[in-house]
Image (cartoon, rainbow, N blue to C red; front, top):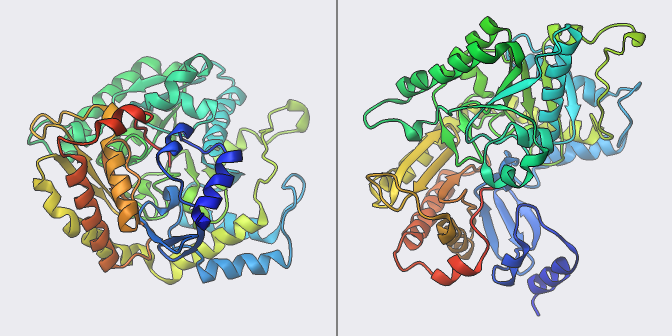
Length: 468
């Protein structure tokens, strides 16, 4: 028995994997990974896989990055953890100062959580609690976009709209208000992204006019709806939304968990709209893909609504055991150093252009409805009928065919339904981008053949969209 097989056997005896129908692994072998190196992952039998999805969108500077490794090692020699209630430490102070400095003006306070979903919960609770402290207890609902995804804890699910994740738990969810997404894939023929995004804002305007008195905040994934299929829209929507939230007295929450730290072509997506949200939620790439951490940045105005004598019970009594963990802070500080010292955002422009040119031929593929891109995120939408954009039945799991072919060729491409996407580490080379485009093209050809395996479609669990 190979080493891979031994580790698979031991794993399946004890583990329950995330976002997985475990019965799939009767047919689809797990891939046990022994080590990482840059953009590569290597299994126990020595096969390598190019990590095209940054290990669920977190790894920006490669596996085993020596600069991040060293910063964590240095921190280990001083302090591994201390509670952040009543105590503080050097890495968390420095990280907070730097996050305030590099994010849009006005975000002056940082609250930490352990992961993206928890960060969303913090922002939602903080917004609701702000209005409570301001004697407006009726402002307790949230407006969200259709096709959005904000995490899988209960409140985070409540403001999401990917049915696969939310339908089962409807009885547990908050009563939220959904507004049609400005998703530009759905724009009319011949209409540009900006015009469509402007037109779609009318529904948000109307909703705010009708419900602002009971709404605490609007929450959006700026520019890219990730788990909803890498659907994208124009920054003008965010500019209009900021103005409207101010006019109606409603908070604006930006979930930049997936799109922050350069994914959209700017350090933060909100920069492209020239705005400052009331809450900016960051995670994933924050620590370079090393350790779980989330940061929620907010304004002095929000902070001030909680600042009072203890007896008033206005404090934000929310905590996570590992809040502001020194090792995670060290990883984040090293990540920020790399962004600053290597001029990463500028360097990514060439990589982004290479991704576009390497996949340009797929625009003419008979079963590709769209190749879309925002910065370092590129998505290829496979469809049954190109002219009408008719999707493949989800039961056919066409994306699974791409995934399996890519593994055979030495690449980790994990489609979202029938959407094949690239979200690679920023240390990828132009030649490696060309390789991914070649593998993806081959996989799409295989997946869109009419003779795609019916056995795979019927015997395995329905295709699902991953949360990243």
